[in-house]
Image (tube, rainbow, N blue to C red; front, side, top):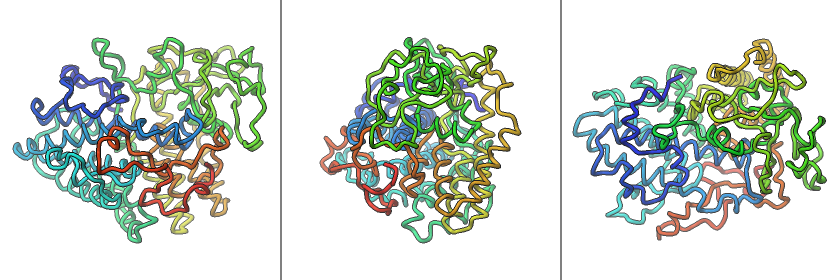
Length: 562
């Protein structure tokens, strides 16, 4: 795994950027003297800032998508209230006021010095960012963006046009990466391996064609044209497009650890977040070997489960209350067995003193603790985590992994009724995902590997899942594949959110705890800080407006599991 802490601390001090600051990014960041601005940055400082902001943008957008699809816990009983316009102000600012503005400042410097590889990398990053903006908001500014003098209130461009521009940027980027230029001082993703950057670009092209297969009759053909040669795209873990975090602080000001680690391992009262009951229950019921890596249990019994809760019922109020009438009896509610202590979708109750009891993020992807607890075995006890435990937060932000590419290939094959090829791609996606996740045990020096799933356990799981896919009817195949889009994208959430809107699967997602949560978010509100000042952006009346590539039936009714 590439290590971020090899990067010069001087560079970070020069930037004056804390990762956590991106959560509250404001629209006037270009006036902040601690950030890179047009009058005091050279080309490589620009690109350093752009890469950092890109990782933050993708992580935050991914977390939003993961919350609505039950991969992460969503606080708030209705979708509209939970994701009101101000919630995504920071993400919008990262894209437009930081990355795109910095690119506009950096490109003339790159052209002047003939550093065309720098431009190629910026093209790839911008294309991925633009696609994510369309995926979450629909129509967004592009042609008039980052031209404040001429267009102080940029108009939105149709989502289809922005996607077309992203495809053009990726193709330009591939060509530019073959042009002359000096190495990038700090290439955090591929360490100046431009062959891998080109694979990331072609994988972005595949993603664009993949997302638009419902509205573009030629998209699958374009997708398959790239996919026909595995050397074209990210097909192995060595090529994975990811950001790598580091451990610790610089002079106590700048924290370079994974934010999910910070939330759960750096709070005096214990964990700062809840894990999703749906995801934990899904993985427990399927005996998914990745669960010991995704989650760390601080306690061996959840109140309400078939064990002795040791007087903790008051810390999980729903465990002493009747099940709501609208939640089916066969669906997970309130608690999960074996000490997986999380929360239900939309639970907005107050926070009891359970920070040292609830389940927290594990060793993947946030570099926390590997879960080596064994119920009833005193040699493998459970206990609360503390700052510095596990891998110390030196985890990753997955952007595009080889397993994701195989999931895309599986869906395309299934859409073409090529069940045998879909089965093989699904099997490959599972294998690659589990290989990557289980490899993270080495990140936690305290992990007891004797508890880790064996190769036999892993092979049995992959075989069982593949056999289930083989035996299922068409709907069943979509159900299994849709579930893996969510489970296997843990740590990101963008592809899972897109998959759910594109296919409507899986249909077994946990029901919202509120019987009237409102329509599922087919696209998010425009950020308040933009809509309130830009006269050319009219705020959406609701979150039911579909992005251009989503031509499925309107909500309510689709997706089925709202």
